[in-house]
Length: 123
Image 1 (cartoon, one colour):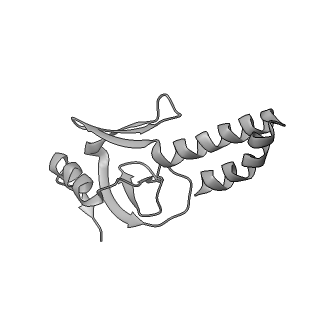
Image 2: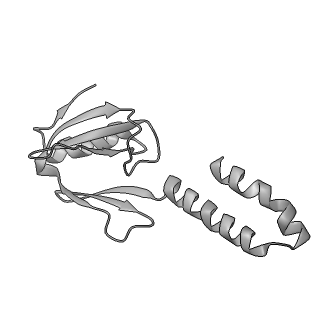
Protein backbone atom coordinates (compact mmCIF):
# COMPACT_ATOMS: atom_id res chain seq x y z
CA UNK A 1 0.00 0.00 0.00
CA UNK A 2 2.79 2.40 0.90
CA UNK A 3 4.60 1.68 -2.36
CA UNK A 4 1.36 2.26 -4.27
CA UNK A 5 1.00 5.66 -2.63
CA UNK A 6 4.55 6.42 -3.73
CA UNK A 7 4.19 5.11 -7.29
CA UNK A 8 0.64 6.13 -8.32
CA UNK A 9 1.27 9.90 -8.39
CA UNK A 10 4.13 9.31 -10.85
CA UNK A 11 1.93 7.73 -13.53
CA UNK A 12 1.14 11.07 -15.22
CA UNK A 13 4.89 11.79 -15.34
CA UNK A 14 5.57 8.40 -16.93
CA UNK A 15 2.82 8.89 -19.53
CA UNK A 16 3.96 12.41 -20.42
CA UNK A 17 7.63 11.39 -20.55
CA UNK A 18 8.64 14.43 -18.54
CA UNK A 19 10.64 14.53 -15.32
CA UNK A 20 12.01 11.02 -15.74
CA UNK A 21 14.46 11.59 -12.87
CA UNK A 22 11.58 12.14 -10.47
CA UNK A 23 10.11 8.82 -11.62
CA UNK A 24 13.48 7.07 -11.15
CA UNK A 25 13.86 8.55 -7.65
CA UNK A 26 10.35 7.54 -6.61
CA UNK A 27 10.84 4.03 -8.05
CA UNK A 28 14.01 3.71 -5.96
CA UNK A 29 12.13 4.83 -2.84
CA UNK A 30 9.34 2.33 -3.58
CA UNK A 31 11.92 -0.45 -3.99
CA UNK A 32 13.38 0.39 -0.58
CA UNK A 33 9.90 0.34 0.94
CA UNK A 34 9.24 -3.10 -0.53
CA UNK A 35 12.64 -4.35 0.69
CA UNK A 36 11.76 -3.29 4.23
CA UNK A 37 8.48 -5.20 4.15
CA UNK A 38 9.66 -8.44 2.53
CA UNK A 39 13.36 -8.31 3.27
CA UNK A 40 13.57 -9.85 6.76
CA UNK A 41 14.41 -13.50 7.41
CA UNK A 42 15.14 -15.28 10.65
CA UNK A 43 17.32 -18.37 10.30
CA UNK A 44 18.10 -20.91 13.02
CA UNK A 45 21.44 -22.54 12.23
CA UNK A 46 22.51 -24.97 14.94
CA UNK A 47 22.68 -22.95 18.15
CA UNK A 48 22.66 -19.58 16.37
CA UNK A 49 19.79 -17.28 15.43
CA UNK A 50 20.62 -15.19 12.39
CA UNK A 51 18.60 -12.12 11.49
CA UNK A 52 19.00 -11.28 7.81
CA UNK A 53 17.81 -8.13 6.13
CA UNK A 54 17.73 -7.81 2.35
CA UNK A 55 19.54 -4.47 2.40
CA UNK A 56 22.12 -5.18 5.16
CA UNK A 57 25.12 -7.43 4.49
CA UNK A 58 25.74 -8.64 8.06
CA UNK A 59 22.49 -8.17 9.95
CA UNK A 60 23.14 -10.08 13.17
CA UNK A 61 23.87 -13.44 14.78
CA UNK A 62 22.69 -14.36 18.27
CA UNK A 63 23.47 -17.32 20.52
CA UNK A 64 20.23 -19.19 21.29
CA UNK A 65 21.83 -20.46 24.53
CA UNK A 66 21.85 -16.84 25.79
CA UNK A 67 18.10 -16.33 25.32
CA UNK A 68 16.31 -16.06 28.67
CA UNK A 69 12.80 -14.94 27.71
CA UNK A 70 10.43 -14.49 24.78
CA UNK A 71 7.52 -12.08 25.16
CA UNK A 72 4.80 -11.07 22.67
CA UNK A 73 4.87 -7.36 21.90
CA UNK A 74 3.30 -4.79 19.60
CA UNK A 75 5.96 -2.13 20.12
CA UNK A 76 6.46 0.40 17.35
CA UNK A 77 10.14 0.83 18.14
CA UNK A 78 12.52 0.34 15.24
CA UNK A 79 13.49 -3.29 14.79
CA UNK A 80 14.11 -5.92 12.11
CA UNK A 81 10.40 -6.71 11.93
CA UNK A 82 7.95 -6.02 9.12
CA UNK A 83 4.82 -6.50 11.23
CA UNK A 84 3.56 -5.12 14.53
CA UNK A 85 2.70 -8.69 15.64
CA UNK A 86 6.14 -9.21 17.16
CA UNK A 87 8.08 -11.08 19.79
CA UNK A 88 10.75 -9.61 22.04
CA UNK A 89 13.69 -11.92 22.71
CA UNK A 90 15.66 -11.09 25.86
CA UNK A 91 19.25 -12.23 26.24
CA UNK A 92 21.59 -12.72 29.21
CA UNK A 93 23.53 -9.51 29.93
CA UNK A 94 21.50 -7.42 27.48
CA UNK A 95 19.12 -4.65 28.49
CA UNK A 96 17.59 -4.29 25.04
CA UNK A 97 15.60 -7.20 23.60
CA UNK A 98 15.70 -8.26 19.97
CA UNK A 99 12.26 -7.54 18.48
CA UNK A 100 11.32 -9.63 15.43
CA UNK A 101 8.19 -10.78 13.60
CA UNK A 102 8.46 -14.34 12.30
CA UNK A 103 5.58 -15.48 10.09
CA UNK A 104 4.74 -18.50 12.28
CA UNK A 105 5.59 -17.29 15.79
CA UNK A 106 4.52 -20.50 17.53
CA UNK A 107 6.68 -22.76 15.35
CA UNK A 108 9.58 -20.32 15.65
CA UNK A 109 9.34 -20.28 19.45
CA UNK A 110 9.09 -24.09 19.52
CA UNK A 111 12.27 -24.33 17.45
CA UNK A 112 14.11 -21.99 19.84
CA UNK A 113 12.91 -23.79 22.97
CA UNK A 114 13.89 -27.15 21.45
CA UNK A 115 17.47 -25.85 21.36
CA UNK A 116 17.33 -24.02 24.70
CA UNK A 117 14.64 -25.49 26.99
CA UNK A 118 15.44 -22.89 29.69
CA UNK A 119 13.79 -20.09 27.69
CA UNK A 120 10.78 -18.61 29.51
CA UNK A 121 7.90 -17.98 27.13
CA UNK A 122 5.35 -15.39 28.22
CA UNK A 123 1.91 -15.24 26.66
